[in-house]
Amino acid sequence: MTFGNFTPAELACKCGCGFMPAPDFMARVQRLRDAVGFALPVSSAARCPEHNAKVSHTGRTGPHTTGRAIDLKVSHEKAFAVVCEAVRLGFTGIGVNQKGDSRFVHVDDLPNAPGQPRPTVWSY
Figure 1 (cartoon, rainbow, N blue to C red):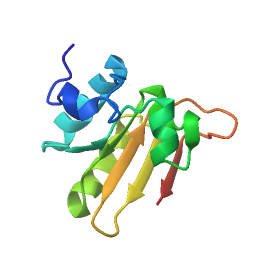
Figure 2 (cartoon, rainbow, N blue to C red):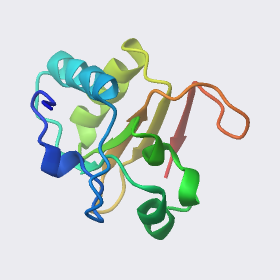
Figure 3 (cartoon, rainbow, N blue to C red):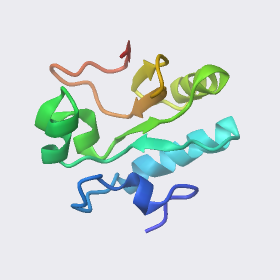
């Protein structure tokens, strides 16, 4: 399975279980990368429910457990470009963390659902 400019190693769940993002979602992320014209280093992509419960307040059912969410290590003007293009390309969830040493932008394309309204934007 190919993921454009992204490698399976950076996309797989960090616990080693092998859970991967949805291929159609990654095709959309690749379109985002092509639109901004610069590399999008991955902080976190797919997470199995068990791993997500260990690393996120969203527990076993957070956006990353769907295989349709990714955190991209970008900051400053690159973060702004990612947010603008993500909106234009129809991503429905955008989270922005631009403080400290772990700056990133989260994007997902989840549908509107109870307890998970979409489209939406938030900060960490």
